[in-house]
Length: 330
Image 1 (spheres, helix red, strand yellow):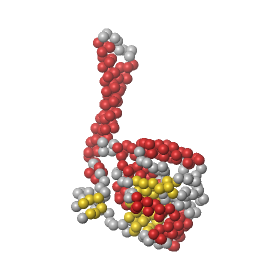
Image 2 (cartoon, helix red, strand yellow):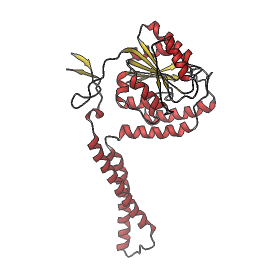
Image 3 (cartoon, one colour):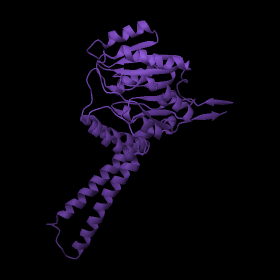
Image 4 (cartoon, helix red, strand yellow):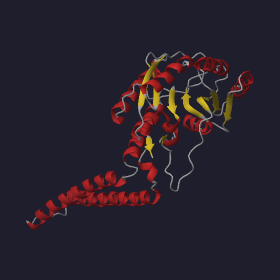
């Protein structure tokens, strides 16, 4: 008998999630997008209905101060498949996505921004690419981006750095237009601002990640929430992703290596100075002695930090975190 793998192992774990209620959940985080909500809901519906798939459209209001919620309620009056999650304040895009993922009941989940720069008419192509390509996640690529240079230039630098460091062959990590299989979202947690790195996190878990060039439109309503601060924050988040995907379950490999380098360097320096001292040279005016001792001390502290991290990892370790099962023949 062939069955899909559960997201958690049977022993000591929560019960598997219930079967999906609909085929496609479309998740749209919005912040002050009153001018686009009604049109966006209509275009999403028009794109999915011809496919013969059941659907739901989930708007997550991340602390809007305009009439966004009222527009969503109007959209729901026109289409009962429209849902609203209203957050108490602005928690950030990652939190808004998580809130939507928590209530999404679709077998597939589509995310797109609420400013209509992402084209809802591309949803059928995204779904087709996912199914025909056998991917677990397909990310959009704004090949001809309709944004000012102040947005496109830092985005190019950011995507180049991410592609090289994370070794995931995507052109546009910042694109919010993505489609996921449900299993990806059950295994890849996001927090902070790590939403743009879901493809990296998914790839490190063994999921298949693809990309599709999509149409992009200039902004016609509202104001952009993009700033240069996203560039350096994104690089810091990338370092976080690289660390948690490589060393979360083996922290001593990182701290131990750094500690041994410091400890070894200090030891070599002090051995050299010991030989000079035995040859009758005074060390009272040699700052190298201080450097060697300092390197040994720092190296030992870093090494002990790694050992403490290993103890914490052993205490909190869950077997299901160390693997991801695609299929189980029982």
